[in-house]
Image 1 (cartoon, rainbow, N blue to C red):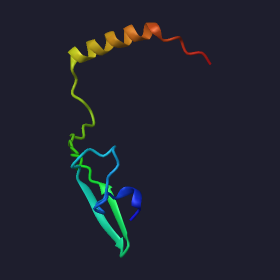
Image 2: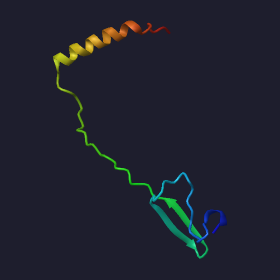
Image 3: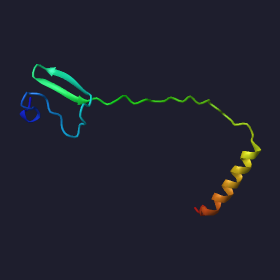
Image 4: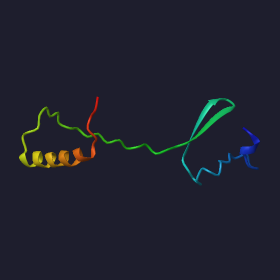
Length: 82
């Protein structure tokens, strides 16, 4: 063990970036080698299942809204030139 990371009682001293009483994982590699890692909490992953929709049913209200959006946004786009 490196003398710079042990105190007078030969306890391991963690760097100051590690908050006090943080969980760590200690793994013995061989007789003289120990690996100390900070234990991070497991991240929660969420899975959302979506239906496979090939075609939406007709919705006149949405069609009208979409037409207004296209008309408004079409004003700010320069015409396509080849």
